[in-house]
Length: 488
Image 1 (cartoon, rainbow, N blue to C red):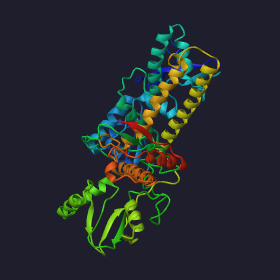
Image 2: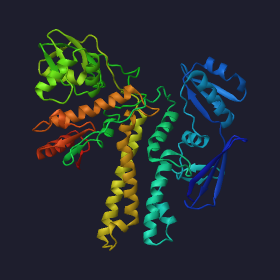
Image 3: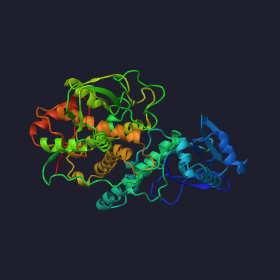
């Protein structure tokens, strides 16, 4: 069975069809097989069907409108040119955001295919994807056989970055894509596949610079956060937060998120507390009139974080669930179980974020095995070449670094205000998860770091070597990756 790689595609607007180009060699400009298929591109929008038909009445016979669910439709057009016009009319009339992908990417996502996937030709002269048959490293190795060692390594690294990215995103190989757009494209793809709607416009913000000491050791938790977004943990996603099927009946349900607000009654007079939720601290200080009291309290107690208060016995206040639990344990508050604003995650449907992270983690683990095998062969066969000149090892490490960086950036991207996917509910849930993780990790140590040692970029300043031992032990017990030790 001859393996063919999908190298390119075009859309014929006149004949409304996709044309796919296949070859055995990934670097060739000559194709071994060309496949053509009719395809009607489409998009989703959250408006009533009657409104959609009214707005697009001039395209009658050239579009088809299907109701996906209440107030959500799919608009399918005869060709991409008509779809673009339809999208513009609806967007201008309603102000709605529409994810309009190029037809080639739509076709590949609909079929669950991508560039540089491997295919075979069937007896009916059609194409069939070879599941688990994709080996880009082997393809790169074969394509660079005629080059000398140095050129093979240099071209191999360049090709790995390029091919892995295009394969992951299903975008055309000739597309120029800056690094910051990779996650944007990945999210576009999954919103499209899941028929999700972009409901928010980005909030333009300038990130505040975080001043850290020039020298020191820090524990970086950025590699841990993605694992907490998996289904078995918090299952955070645009379609899984505050779902209609899993709303908790009580505060302490398994799927209640810690950024929920619960009403508490304070038991002491003149009481202040420092919330672990930075956004709550800021909002409370902004909205409550007793700013001078809090500033005096900060000065007298030499603290850097804004406190909430003062509260007096019998006062009621909505505070983050994580804070409420902590203050109940110290006897400073009781939970009233009355006016709560709960947030939760779905227990049934896995978010597409969890699906993406699971696939990335699986690929990373497979690479780790391959790297181990490569190292084993390199030394047991007494090969003189250093690892840096071992093509297989270099390609695996290049892919590993690319995927690992992408994995750690997912939570950051989801919480960033300056993207079209920004949703405050999702962003706040991720921030709360980060803060809870840092606090729990700190409390697992023999000497608990102060809040001032927990930096805004989610790193803990290491002032005692016992922190490292205790925290490593803690993360091993809860089956999560150990935070990285960073030297600054």
